Image 1 (tube, rainbow, N blue to C red):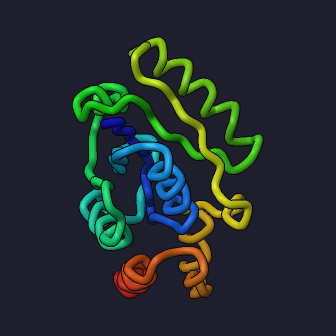
Image 2 (cartoon, rainbow, N blue to C red):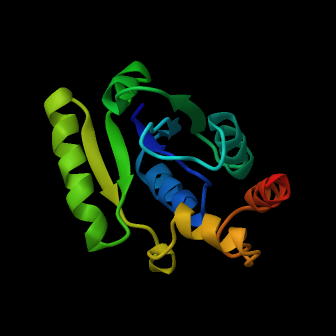
Length: 160
C-alpha cells in the first residue's frame, strides 16, 4: 500500500486543500492529512478544531486519515509509513519555499519523496488567510470552504 502524508496548518481547510487531497487520492492508496503545529504562525483555530473541520469535510472520502503532529514532518511521515509528502503549488511564488523544504526533507530522510501537486486553476488564488480575512469582514466564504468551516468562522466572530 502506498501511503502519503499531506501536512498543513489548514487554518481553516479550503476547497483548494480538498482538491489537492482528491488529486493525491487518485495517485496513492491512502492519504494522511496532518495538521501541523507551526510555532511561527498565529492560528485562528486550535489544532483540535482544525482536525474536527477536516474530519467533517473529508468524511465521505475513502482512504483518508486525519491526524496532527508536532515536530519534523519527515519524522511523522516515517511514523505513519508514508512514502512521500504531498505539497500543493498554487503559483510560481510558492515554488521557491516549497523547493527549499523539499531539499531539506530529502537531506533529513532520503527515503521520503516530496510530490508537488497543483490544484484546479479555480483555486490557485485561494488560501486560508484570504478566507479568514474575508470572514472577518462578514464576506461570503461559501464558495471557498465547506459548511463546517463557515459555521466555525461564524462562531469565532461571535467570540471576538
